[in-house]
Image (cartoon, rainbow, N blue to C red):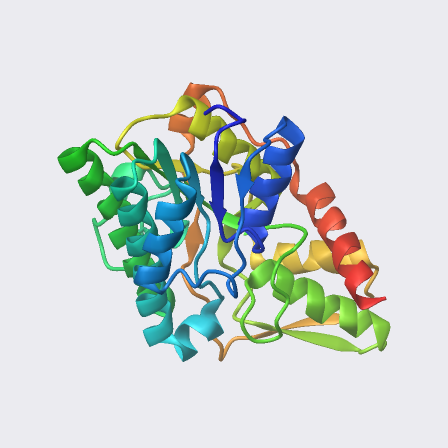
Amino acid sequence: MNLHSRIYVAGHQGLVGSAIVRRLQTEGATNLILRTHHELDLVDQAAVEAFFVAKRPEYIFLAAAKVGGIHANSTYPAEFIRDNLAIQTNVIHSAWKCGSKKLLFLGSSCIYPRDCQQPIREEYLLTGPLEPTNEWYAIAKIAGLKMCQAYRRQYGFNAIVAMPTNLYGPGDNYHPDNSHVVPALIRRIYDAKIVSAPQVTIWGSGTPLREFLHVEDLADAALFLMHNYNDEDLINVGSGQEVSIAELASTIASAVDYKGQLVFDTSRPDGTPRKRLNINRLHALGWRARIPLRPGLEQTIDAFALTRS
């Protein structure tokens, strides 16, 4: 990828897209193409086609998606499958049709079967049932990666697929109901400290194990893959750092100096019991994550605190 090419980052105001933009700017990209949701609704097929015809982006980072945690997925299943299918279908098809050189599609580790052998290898995709609490989003993402593979096979379109693990970092969504686990815990525990609440209630048992990757590491991996990877097979992107939800909550409480009690509500769903990616394929290419969990969480908490002051 030439950094002076026309580069379109779809979803540039989100957690992932904004990190990719920051990294591209740091690397010296001079011709970024960015559109807000108000300026370009990616669900609108005609609008997307007109945009690609007018701007002719050469490289695309497809980071736009409708995302959320267990509550959001359970509450809005129709929107999660409909909007994500529409977004990726419109962008991938228009990119190919308008002659774009390369597209990076960003999926999610939730596409893998619920009870996968650990750590999860790329070839485990579609070998078992999905986790019911996020199957709508997962099915849409599976369709997106298969569309990339199909367009490569039939049309020779250079679409590559990266499958990140659970992400966190500055610029995340801290909505009280619709956020992922790290921002949800940061908001809940930080606010509890501010009002001196005696306890914080956390969904589930606290026993599920999760792998977390700082979004700046993902942005670094995204550029690395755009420069160096051109194969059909999806490729996992992870940190190799695994922690239980209880340990994660305790680390966040320590980082914000919250002294209250953490109470786990076992009447709430846990989600997938364990989800750690096998990242040997990416390591073999020469890329590794660099940001440890505790410093990454502290940086994220500092950024969140600025929004509350």
